[in-house]
Length: 226
Image 1 (cartoon, one colour):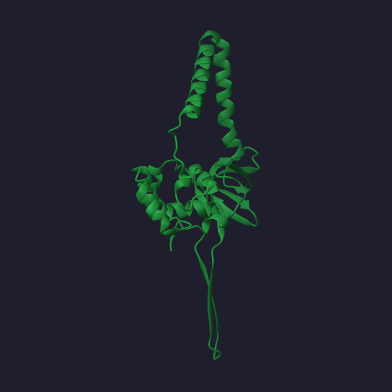
Image 2 (cartoon, rainbow, N blue to C red; image 1 turned 90 degrees about the horizontal axis):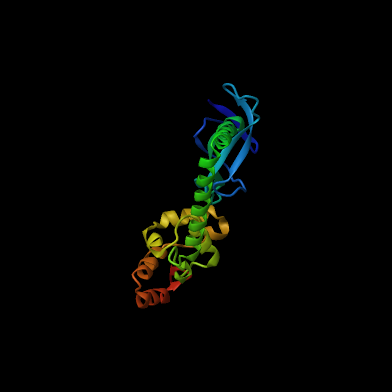
């Protein structure tokens, strides 16, 4: 069922499950935002907003600006890339919330009818959750120290790991384009970094070739070849 929604001063026609681009939002990745519902081509059950999930922050395509003055030998080019956010439509607020309410009612009814069955299940789930958390905390091999890579500091390491790259092997397998996209999504402060040498450094660290890594890093300046 199509919706007409508003983000900022612009309106968009979208459908549930559709991904579309809007001007940059301040919300974090994975966060669910509510957009005002302008019009719906169907029954909305009194809904006044549509819920969407933040999928990605990025820079748009470069807009080229050319300035030219005839007979003055003046010709200047410049470019601009607009900050954008990609959203995925989940549905109107009523449609998203309703299934959760039904599910909660069913669980409550089952719990009342069979207390002896439900309580042990909850106990097992709680115990499993506790064990999982403890295992993650105690496991020293979940991730590598990516700060050993020339050009990666504490903050960039945090950004890369939040994107799912936690080990030298994963960093070595990542493409330069993927790393640039991650840095651009974190903002202009980080998009200026050049990650071209990071996969090569990570492959040496993964294979524990520390002498070769040290020799390579002597030729680098902030992760870039001098």
